[in-house]
Image (cartoon, rainbow, N blue to C red; front, side):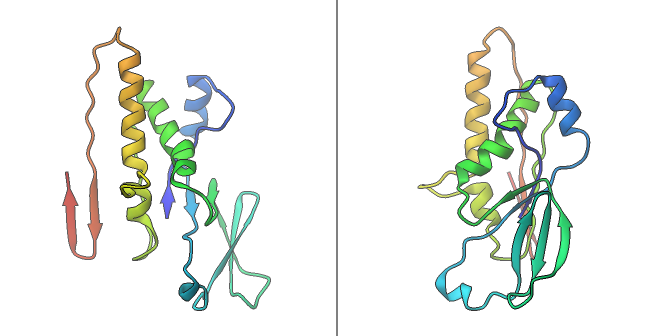
Length: 161
């Protein structure tokens, strides 16, 4: 799964955030947790090495190297993804900017779960929207208009709202 943006644990000014965010499109990779049945069929392993992601065959120690900005290992939670990606998107929107998040990957990679979540674990859309409207309500001195859209493309079908 690929995503964009990050708000780190340390507080930053909007100027810092703008300079950091608009430097380039941010890429985040989320490793899908595997079931026991899937573990036996693994063909490619991932290893994070600072800002590089190494994809390699299980019996090999070397592999292909990819650049990324943020890596979520398989034990990462929906909240971890929100605190990294959603929080910055809210910060940008509250600063008057647009925010876009794109999830892409092969079928059954976990994109839908990450973005939409479930009743037990809300996804990035639910948590980000909730945070955005809480922040808007807290700043009652402004008249705010919010426009949001999402669409999903799967196989030959496009679903939008």
